[in-house]
Structure formats: C-alpha cells, structure tokens
Length: 321
Ligand code: NAP
Ligand code: GDP
Image (cartoon, rainbow, N blue to C red; front, side, top):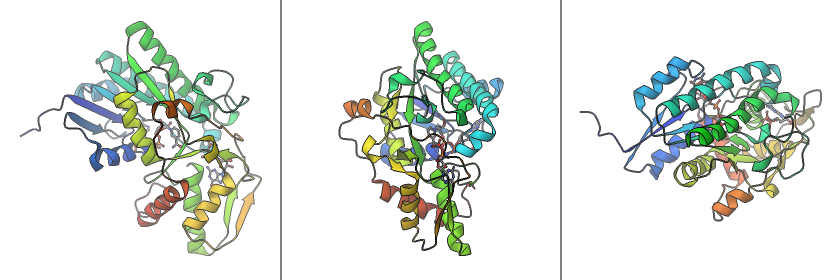
C-alpha cells in the first residue's frame, strides 16, 4: 500500500550532487519532520534544461516546497573553458524550475547562488546588497550572470505574483559526494584527489597557481543544516549569504597544507604558477546570517577536511572523478 502523503512535499533538484547528498544525510539523520515527504531528484529523473521534462517532474511529485540545486557546476578551470555552456544550461534550468514552481503553485523555492558571482572589482566584505554592482570575474562570467538572473527572477515572481522564491549564497562548498575530477572540479576535491594519487605513485603534489588567493570554505553538512533553516524559517525574498566568518578565510596554500596533514602526505609541495589563480578573493560577510542565527556552530575546517578526505579514500571506487 502506498505511504500516506505528507502535508509538505519537498523536491530537491540536484539531489544527487554534493549539496543534495548532504541535505539528504541531514534529513535522514533526524531532521525529517513527520509532515514532510522529501524527493531527491537527479538528471536521471528529469533533464531540467528541457521545459516539458521539468513540468512533468513537477506534475509527478506536486511539490509544495523546492530546494533548487541543479546546475552545471565546476571549478575555475571548467568555468574558463565553458562560459557559454554555463550560461545557457543554467539559464534554461533555472527558468524551467522557477516557472514550473510558479505554474504548479509551489509555496516556497530556495535556490542557490554563489559568492563567486559577485563583482570582481569591489570593496570587502561583500554583502547581499552587492550582487549586481559590477561585472563578475572574467573566468566565470557565464555561470555568474546566469546565477544573478535567479535573483532577478525571484524579485519578479514576488512583485508580479507574490511568490516566496528566495536564494542562498554559499561560499566554496566541499564534502562527501563532491566532484573529485582534477580537471573539472573545485580546488579542495581536486587537491584531495591529487594527494591520493601522489601518495599512491610516490610523486609530488602540484598545487595550481600561486597558492595566494583566499577562500572561505563551508562544509556541505553545515550548509545542509542551514538550508533546512532557510526552508523552514527564513521569510525574505532577498538572498542570504551562508558562510563562515571573514576570519576563517584561508589561502589556497593553507587549504592544500590542511589536506596534506589530513592525508598524512610526506611528499613535496609544488606550485604551478603557469596556471590561473582566478579571482584573488571574494571575502563575504556572514553578518546577516549571524543576526538570524547567532549560535550556529560551523564544523572546524580541519575536522571537516579530515572527514572529507576519509570519505574520499573509503569511497575511491565510487567517487565522481
Ligand atoms: P554537483 O555536485 O555538481 O551536483 C549538481 C547536481 O545538479 C547533480 O544532482 C546533477 O544531477 C544536477 N544536474 C545538473 N544538470 C542537470 C540537468 N540538466 N537536469 C537535472 N539535474 C541536473 O553540484 P553542487 O556542488 O552540489 O552544487 C549544488 C548547487 O550549489 C548549485 O546550484 C551550485 O551552483 C551551488 N554552489 C556550489 C558551490 C560549490 O562549491 N560546489 C558553491 C556555491 C554554490 P546528476 O547527478 O544526475 O548529474
Ligand atoms: P573558485 O573558488 O570559483 O575560483 O574555484 P576553485 O574551487 O576551482 O578554486 C580555484 C583556486 O584554487 C584558484 O586560485 C586555483 O589556482 C587554485 N587551485 C590550486 N590547485 C587547484 C586544483 O587542483 N584544482 C582547482 N580547481 N583549483 C586549484
């Protein structure tokens, strides 16, 4: 017999990715409420660049709430190569998801922006009011403008139709189930994979760029807990930055050294300065988050990196790479 339908049906697009898997874990580990049914959708359930397939997904599940994560995602070097594809695919996905949510009467949508979409030439720290205040870094203009349009659409759906469509702005995310591809992925999963191979092959670890750029990293499981709070409690249409504090920003060199310690790598550390550094920094303020959640505890970076390295080593055969 079919399970009785909960009062809330939460559809998570991009449910098979880094952030989606983290939300699924947090929900399964005790955060699921009795009146909630959760659907974690991947591209196998629907290609969201296709409007008809997106509508069919919404008709099938009739969600009351949506966490919209699905996107073409990649690190600096994938962005540099495919700016046009990032723009086109993500524009299609976002328009299809937001419009299907509107058409089917979804009560709330929480979409996902990123701190890398902020203006390149700016003052620091960056805050939520600055998304549209200047061109993004050249390396990822396609991804950035597509993401910025989510904020434009959310405003439009609210002003014309009164919809509660909002967005969160995380910094660089990492954790289990990331994309550990060295060419296409983000820096931490790339470095974890490189250290794994360097240990196995007895070679040096080559960090790309100078190691000087700075990043705020957020553990996917911390981000997942914050997503649940935004879904349930946050009532603004304006986005909110989900980030560790400005003091917790680290250089790429420090991040690499943390991976080296976590994986007990004893080999040499090299820097390939022929590779791009990308945006030097995108230091974001988490003041708004702290006003809402003054007691939120982030997992210490060292511990989160260690857990992620352990996950990758234990799941090497199945990890995306
Ligand atoms: P990810 O691990 O690469 O996962 C991407 C997800 O999107 C997967 O579930 C994938 O499904 C799905 N997807 C991609 N194209 C699709 C399509 N055409 N139709 C349906 N589903 C599609 O990405 P993530 O790191 O979890 O990112 C989640 C969200 O966070 C994204 O919106 C991203 O922009 C944002 N974000 C990420 C970071 C970061 O550092 N990772 C930082 C800031 C913001 P399959 O598994 O079936 O391919
Ligand atoms: P970003 O934060 O959006 O720029 O994207 P990434 O997560 O790809 O981080 C890019 C930064 O990490 C740049 O400064 C790169 O030079 C540096 N980096 C060092 N080694 C690597 C690596 O193995 N992979 C990636 N993606 N970046 C690396």
